[in-house]
Length: 292
Image (cartoon, rainbow, N blue to C red; front, side, top):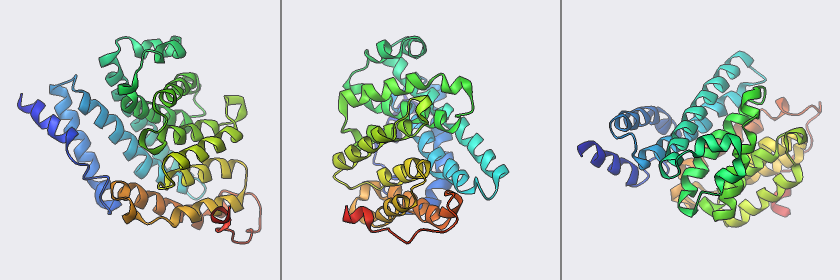
């Protein structure tokens, strides 16, 4: 009873991480918090709040502080980047495991069903499942995107897509269009893997609309995925310039997210020549997105 009470407090209290303005402090604190929750989960293994918090926590930590560092080093220090990406992949898969356990708690057998008939499996999910559905698909989709050279992960892509599409059908406005942002990454995959740049742009536009244009993440996501894929340096600069124009204090609940992504946007702009094949930098066009 005592452990369950602590677990309830940890998973239902105010979000002291998301409102923080010091990414380095959060980066150092998160691992201890995650391991503490894992210790509690060992005692109360069916605690839904802990399962969701661990799925969300490991996914966020891997993206913000592990994969992002690897992304910036991929052209300058490939061995280090590969090691970071491998660690991020393991963290995403750990997060997915917690998410699937959470979905199994309400829908027994759904994890196995997702690998056999994804469309039929996700039809069992309802609106109250959207948070667990979203974070599970975010972890799973990030793992697939990072492990594109692994056949066993690519084979799971239909399951990820089915989860996100079901989430969109249930509540497309969840977390200010977060499900549409997830679809940007899926649609940025090569056409042979079911991707579509045109659909990615539509999901980007919808995510901006649903968030009231108050989130940095759609801009950074589209720039790093589609703009680089299409080798559109001008769009890359415009999107990241728009991301840097946000005021972190304007959305206190997303202060940490904004700070982390703006740090990433600056680093991407500093290293933009590593992502584009043209030899001469194009004229600065960071105002294009605002003009459009």
